[in-house]
Amino acid sequence: MPSFDIVSEVNKVEVRNAVDQANKEVSTRYDFKGSDARIEAADKVLTLFADSEFQLDQVKEILIGKLSKRGVDVRCLDEGKLEKVSGNKVKRAITVKEGIDTELAKRIVKLIKDSKLKVQASIQGEAVRVSGAKRDVLQEVIALARKEVVDFPLQYNNFRD
Image (cartoon, rainbow, N blue to C red):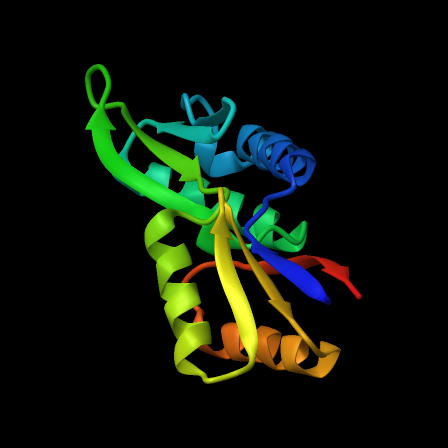
């Protein structure tokens, strides 16, 4: 029985490279000379530091530009709130979301069931497995999910015949 998985994954290598490129650009730009503007990357959290809120927004724009040039979908970024560090310095944590949370998975399963296509959808951890009798029906499900779920980046992999 043909099946595929709906997942949400981020290429960590590309994220790391984009952070490195953004840090390099921030360090060489004239308007950031003498400032403490930088990006630090932990496991799934990117922390942006700057001297002012305006500079922080500039650093974020540089990062988003570098991520999109490297093919990382910026819809997977979840921005935290602005925090004061010391004096007038500020920081903001940006979380890189991976995996489909249960709320979105339930929404996808409901969308597939409401479409009346002859497939079965089941939640398996951080993925949704869709299986059906025909390959064409599975391709219709992929088209439906691409059209309806626009607020979160989804990938369709593990297609088995």
